[in-house]
Image (spheres, rainbow, N blue to C red):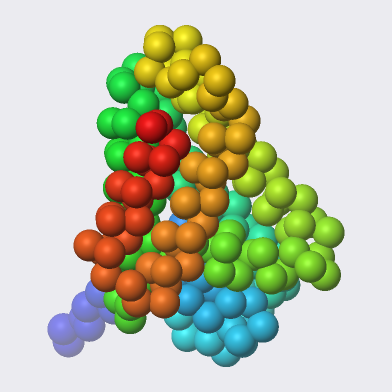
Length: 213
């Protein structure tokens, strides 16, 4: 009588079982998608279902990774500010004539504001965070810190230009910095409203002429 062969699977060592569920998302990618959604629609108009669809994560996963909707909004705003800072920092640090420096800063800002799959996204701070700042102290602090940081960076640039004789002795770097920041804000609003880049660049050229004239 022929002896039956043993089950093949019995002779193979069982593979160790994987523990836990594999992560089905990349936190950095998910945060970027949430940022895009908040920036486009604002806080109130963005639902948890919208965020779930955009990130590919269900509600429990969203809560586990980022906290509630407000916490996710704040993390998105922090990410936006970090990205914007990274895009601008080398331009602010570079030792170039003030007119060229300002032109580069505004060109970089327009690159940020005019991007968007469904249209120009504008500035997170101006278009949505400033509205939330009215009722939320933490967001208000972040917005004011952002304004102050931008003013200081511009003021430093104008002080450097004044020291190098590019500006008259009567020039006030602090006042010029506020004008420079105000120009950033107005092109952000106009970009979101659909004003063409060419028109925005005309505004920028006029503002630089006033500040450096």
